[in-house]
Length: 273
Image (cartoon, rainbow, N blue to C red):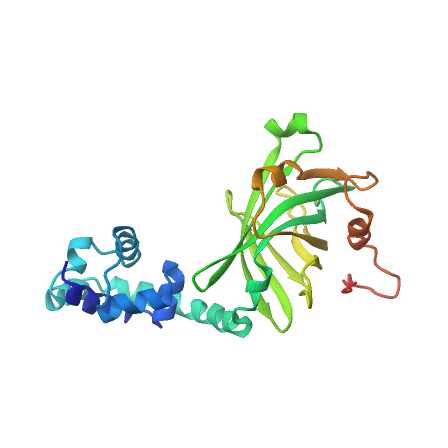
């Protein structure tokens, strides 16, 4: 492989984006390693080369061509400039918010049980498994759950999976998530951070009450920290739907899920305790 050609061609492709950082974020490749590619000090693995080519919509054979020939090929694809430019603005907005939190979300990496009152099953508490992860400079989350009250019903029960983008802004954790299968529901959650030891994270989440009614709904939510290395299958087996008057959910958690609004409050507020 021609390392020099690859480095110059990669630099040309990156010039169509607002920054190299944006390319690294969207590729999920470490910036320090990517800089070695740009400087010609290293070549990507076969796997990373395929990812890079797929991202820029070029062939592996093309990206290794002499730089002048490669530039001619790229210039014949004017749509590329318009397409990449369309993405730049909102990526810049997200990057600006991400930089505010820096790497502070590192303290929250790991797994949690997530508790909230069901929006579709009145009086039932949903317990799901939430994970917050980091890949390169990007933080992301997954939330898995099953809407089943009895273990015998699990085979035919509704399962859900939400993917999310967490941000730490102005001393609060913001979490934007979407349902990853049908992609027809988006939710937002705001949490208090943990100032010392991570135990419980408290907050409020807003989403839709159901796919049929699609009524906006909000309620308190509790995240119970489990650790960074857990037995995922065992944790998932304990998730499901639980009656609010049952004893499966700890009283301390149920107390923090109370959505009662005082007569003089008018809006739902979540305290830190």
